Image (cartoon, rainbow, N blue to C red; front, side):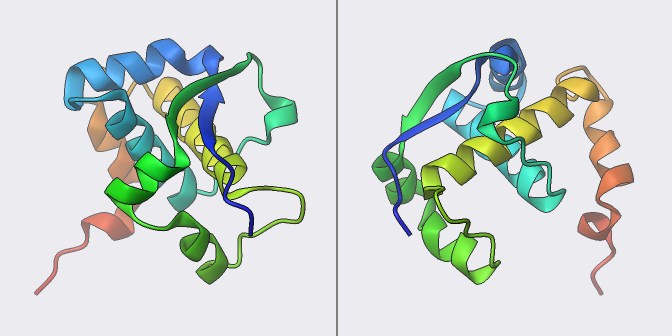
Length: 128
C-alpha cells in the first residue's frame, strides 16, 4: 500500500482540533492522533469527497511513522486497505471522523470526556 506523504483533515474542524490541543495535548499532532483513535475505534471515517472544508495539513507520514509506528501495517492487519487510497488518505479520513465526533459531543468542554465511555464501554472494563 502506498503510504502517501501529507497528512490532513477537513479544515472545518480546525477549531475543534485546536480546542482539544489547548485543553488536553501539547501539540496538534497529538490531538489529531487522539481523533484518529476515536475515528478508528468507532469506524467514523469521513471520505475526502464528503468533507465540508478543504484539506488542512497537520503533519507528514514520515514524522508520524517515526513517532507512532507504521499505519500501513495497522490498516493491513485490520483489513482496512482500499484500492486507490494511500495510508495518508485513510489516516486523514479517520482523523476527520474523530474530530467530527469530538465536535458533536463537545469533548473539549470540562467533564465531557466521559462521553467516550458511553460510546466505547469496552475501553473502561475493570481488569482483574
